[in-house]
Image (tube, rainbow, N blue to C red; front, side, top):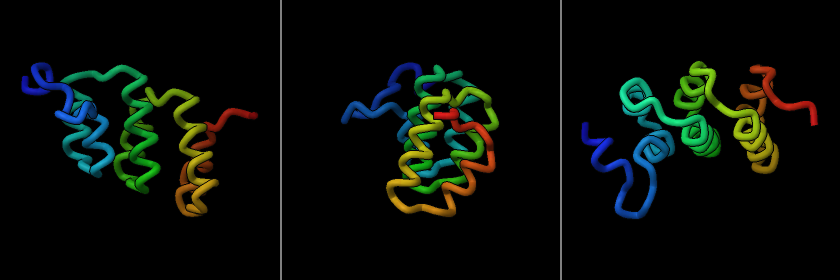
Length: 100
């Protein structure tokens, strides 16, 4: 598979994370199923998708059950600091934020 041979872009970005950042839901789903990325990569992809307000990608990544708590909390923090109320409501509705 191409991903296994070239998992990184020329600029060092991971392909899976980059597809999440670019709102390529189909590509993220495909790569998730074929490559089985680590929870760290899933978390990084989730934070980037949420930061860019790509809720379809973020929702998919949440359904995998592999978004680490620290990544979820970071996405909530980013939503608060950027004033993205819609995203914050979506994230809070998942009831996953740590009780800090």
